[in-house]
Image (cartoon, rainbow, N blue to C red; front, side, top):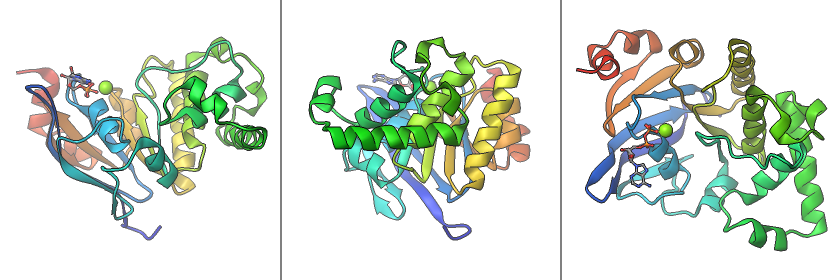
Length: 253
Ligand code: ADP
Ligand code: MG
């Protein structure tokens, strides 16, 4: 993509749950090839924002554009097909199935109705294609040697990277990661950060929700800060770090 081009544009995105405004007219862009951090206290609306971008939840109002086209009216499956991959805040693996199967099945399930429906719709040829792509993504993230292990036997850091491999199936150009470093050991965080830098170098755009400030500050190109559904700050990590409104949001007032 051209330098400075926009991958994702969020325009006045709003999400109400009954009387609660979880996302309050949010506006931001993810530039092609950047790592944009989306930070803010618990309950700020970050995961809801991911659900809006990926079509898991409908907007109350506003628009979301990907590569210049509106996606907020599309079903999840179509949004995945256009090139947006994601992980979830809580690990979602089938612990007794193999690492390879988790990547293949997870990729197939994304955005679809359920396990039974998707298995019934999968023929041999499709299964081979999924397994081939899954193996390729495991290789890409450095987990090829664990392909036949049970997913539940992996360390948490490896499970998180496995989920990234699953999100990479279908070769997205934008990756949304919801707290990928949560609960990881120091060395696991370093490995994760290395992987994200490699993916960025391959040209991916990344939208990263993360609480670990060292991780965020070392990795992101820019930051958007949310509180109570609203964007309260935006800028370079070094700028945002010293923003009084951000300090207030984190330290409580
Ligand atoms: P964050 O990821 O920043 O911690 P969330 O997006 O999970 O925040 O939540 C934002 C707010 O929306 C919270 O007050 C949460 O309780 C509420 N919320 C999230 N999802 C739903 C839902 N499906 N129904 C009702 N309220 C929700
Ligand atoms: Mg969340």
